[in-house]
Length: 118
Image 1 (cartoon, helix red, strand yellow):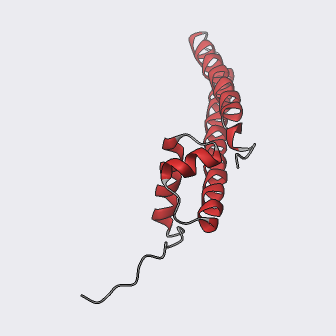
Image 2 (cartoon, one colour):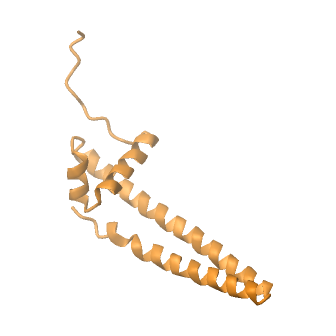
Image 3 (cartoon, helix red, strand yellow):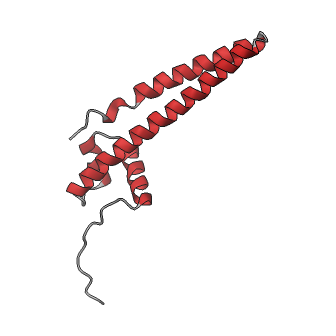
């Protein structure tokens, strides 16, 4: 059940990282040549690209969390390894998603054997 959107994360992050590098280079060159207006534009581009990278990463995390939650609602007794393999995720991505879902209280509760009261 590998979702084709799961592997999209590197492209937006790489694009924003490249844009941030261009902004940083422009700001550095402009500062050295005392062109502070261009330096300000370069820093603005750098900041915008960093924010874009953050938003892209958070969107990818939210997409992963939705996939993990949907899968666990279907089969709450899946192990982390099986869950990661079924969704085409790295083990660490599955663990992080489970941690985020656990912290938010969104994980379904697996029903265990009834307590005998002893």
